[in-house]
Image (tube, rainbow, N blue to C red):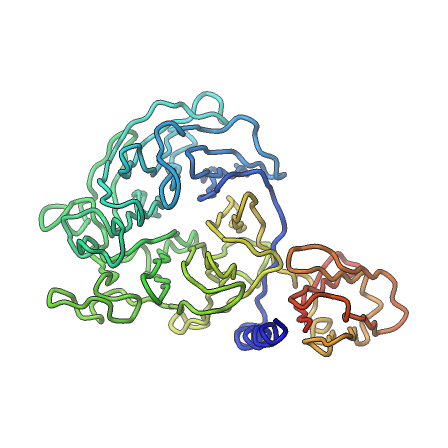
Length: 467
């Protein structure tokens, strides 16, 4: 076990060396949910509410103070099949929701098929009408790979990710079949309870299903639009080895082919004579391998958002995602828009991360278990001088560590050490010199977090490994 943590510490160093200026800390925002799979805002200015979608078919309102309304916004549990990869999976509010009251759902019905449906809000802004208008039903051959995300682009159209229909390896090659709605990104022009086909869809007139916008997706577990420039970001779950992240300018081009099942990320998977060359597909800007890391093997990507809030300036323009199995949060960044760096981090709280959320101000959230957390920058307000002066050694520790604050120890208010479960192990609030020594020989081997708080209510978090 001790050797494992030494190796893990080296792993952290290898990834943090490329992007040391960006780190994340999670703080509990609200608990009491059951299998949250989506978090969205209404898109209405000054509406601070978040709408939390539970897989079983319930939508709850989460207020800005972390409280949950006692009455759900909507409960369609009786018409939803949930469990595994099925359930109520997507929610999108119409761009004119403030006046029309229209919103849209993506769920698996009791026949096991995907349904895209229209609902409206009642006279009470916290309660939806239960009347349903079904726009689209898509037959699902298997129980997995249902996609589920829906969102409006800046063009005003509704985008829908469908998944390739399941099993493994896309046995029906549905993702490359332009006449099949599975394995696609669909785009429709919703008008209340009906829809039309955008004339620029690639098969609007002929050659394929008119709803199809892009093909070759395996099981996009979340896509999002950059709220600043409208760029489309997709996180496509891989088959055997690779998870991928794609970014295209605006919503991309009608008819874009993301390559599945011919290719898994940038690697051959099932290349047939009918497959396009890989250069004629949308190439991921980043991919990662299923390998032992963080809290376990990486296995399945959970897509997030490009940060466009104002609280954490160091986050701006960076794409946040996570891995379901390893509990890591990933940050994708670029200085030139061409070359991208992935910074994986095991945060101070570990969960199987199921979805991200973005509030009306662009601040980000993440869900795991029954809890929703805020994503924050632990270095907010800490000057580079203070950060650079603080030294922790030896790290990893074999019985004792020293925290050296340099010449800035008079600015330090407190030091807390917590374990990976978030439990406080030790607390200091009195400092007589620039150094404190801590005996760690009685602590269990593992990863700990040292939180250093300043008198101006800012904090710095550093990782500690105890062998």
